[in-house]
Length: 307
Length: 252
Ligand SMILES: Nc1ncnc2c1ncn2[C@@H]1O[C@H](COP(=O)(O)OP(=O)(O)OP(=O)(O)O)[C@@H](O)[C@H]1O
Ligand SMILES: [Mg+2]
Image (cartoon, rainbow over all chains, first blue to last red; front, side, top):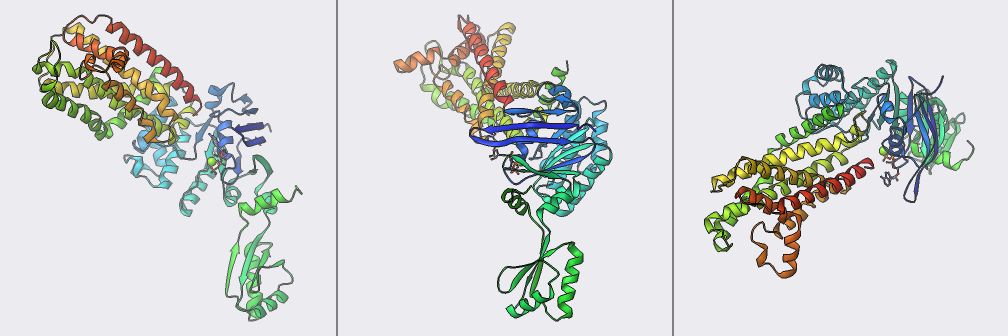
């Protein structure tokens, strides 16, 4: 299949700082692509270049085989862009925000569409309230609703869930999955490996201005290393005993009383380890499961040139 | 065609902003009205202007007060533009398939409407405290056109400042510039009493010509060259600011 978005060798410099260094990405139609990267990695910059808001120094972007810089007006019919700051108008109501965008997109029945979208995003009750009084989750939903006006094929979402509580985030993930099932192509950015894992068909890891790794979520997680169980004991004798019991696992010593145990298959292994310890009457003082963070991936990818 | 409807859709949004923050209109008209009252009731009595009696001082000072209303209004124009830039609204609008210039033009339309509404309120207050004009219909029409021209010029002048400013406070600071020009003009006292160097500047700067033109029109007197010079300034300021503003807009 030919990709619907092709980013080719994009370079961008702000004064002396090289922010993007030959970034190339391909996104298949109907898929979710997650651009993963830490603060300041250049995610928003890349998104602005892809959507034609910012010029690149080198390279080009094709959307549906149209060059963004040349055929911007045509390309703009195909996509919508939700900026990181969730750009909604605080002084207008949710309804008025949607009508505004609907009129600017010249849809046939702006008011009816606004009402439909409010219902779809569970905002009907807040339709007549000013957006300034909305919660963070409601703002994000409105923002996404505004992006759906005119039914664009491609959605660009810059950190759509940053600042949301876990339940709002889950709701938004669900909505994004539904949009995908309707055939939309979604290009989103995130700082969370977990989010990319939950949503994406393909993940690109942006670090130091380059795509330093790319693959499916399971490939990326593999790169990141597995989850770890941290065990803290009361005495070093307990720890020594535990070590002899856990010879089947990869164990790292942290200090005299604590160890990290790598978990090949997360929950299963935790149960196995705790069971093993308790049947031998060794009780850890505290324990905790830690997932590999973006920093771990980053360190691993930038240190080990083994890719 | 869609360019015009888009402009008015975008202006409509900002008119809603203005209607919903009535305090902005009050702040905008408060200072000019206070100054009008101060000048007329406190200082007017001690200002001697050849050919203008103390009772007629309100007629002398009102044109300057109207320009001041427009100048204070421009602080809000700058504020709205800067807020849209910082909040990412411009990014949203720019990513829509609409004409590039509709966004700033919408700002300009809303701004001129807002300024002219404030000016009308201040004009009514002027009438209440004794302002009278012998101007005929055509002279009133011309005076209002010049006021609108000034509003348009100051609106566009605010655009590059508002777009370049990193904060909302910085954005509105430029309106002080216009206020200073007002004080160093014939708005409140004739320029003849000013120190020589300042006088030369005051006589030739745009605000003086604009005030003189409006003042002459409203007192039904010939406007001499002031009308043309005022027009030239208005066109020049609008054009240069427009070119500069739209250029900066492309890169914010
Ligand atoms: N307009 C600009 N002028 C100068 N430098 C900029 C500009 N925009 C971004 N940068 C710099 O480019 C780098 C990348 O910024 P960008 O906003 O793209 O990162 P990001 O990955 O989106 O980060 P975040 O997760 O914080 O949103 C940063 O170092 C930033 O300071
Ligand atoms: Mg960003």
